[in-house]
Image 1: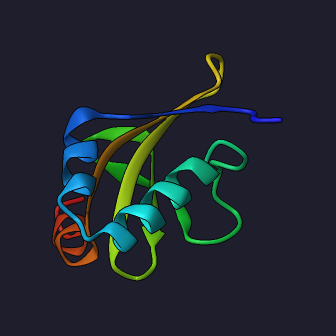
Image 2: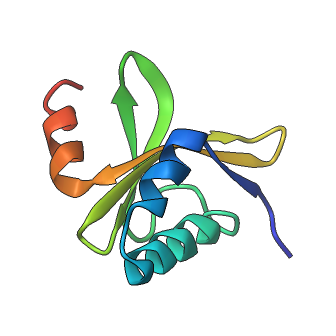
Length: 96
């Protein structure tokens, strides 16, 4: 049974669509897995503070990509805000 619905923002989905097919599959599988366990504690998930917002999480995907997402507990929704290369994400971490 799926605990959360995963919703991917348009910009994040557009980024995924530019990736090679194998990478698209891996990224989408990892994002879909957040439906079952979106909270940090296991794997490559971490709570971060980004752009002054709390309750933003990041998920490292195959040491190549990072997804930033927000959990809406009451609505049972995980919203993927952005997906980018891990190198770009590390540059952003410097501004957190």
